[in-house]
Length: 99
Image 1 (cartoon, rainbow, N blue to C red):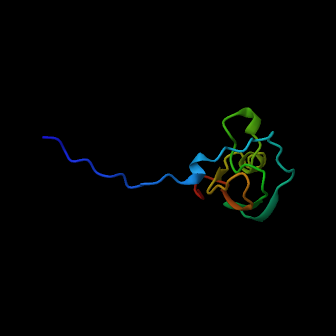
Image 2 (image 1 turned 90 degrees about the horizontal axis):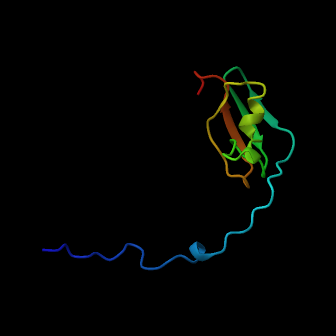
Image 3 (image 1 turned 180 degrees about the vertical axis):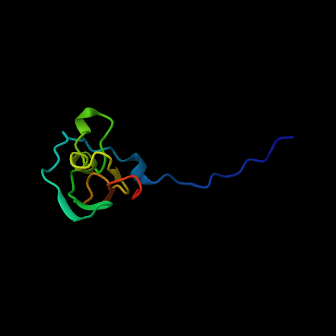
């Protein structure tokens, strides 16, 4: 005895799935880092659009909010992330207990 087939949940394919992927240019993040707040436990950073929140896998994408904070605080860990084209606040734990 075979199980009856069920209709797929999606009966249509959204158009955005078929849209071409825009070409990605070279990674050229903006300079500087705007620290909104910092204490011994955390830092709140304003991430500009065009800068990664955390380093990418490719060495070309090593520059990020987290890598810049780690220059001063080697044990820092990102608490949240934002997409590359998004600007906003990123919270970085500066020590393990704060994470």
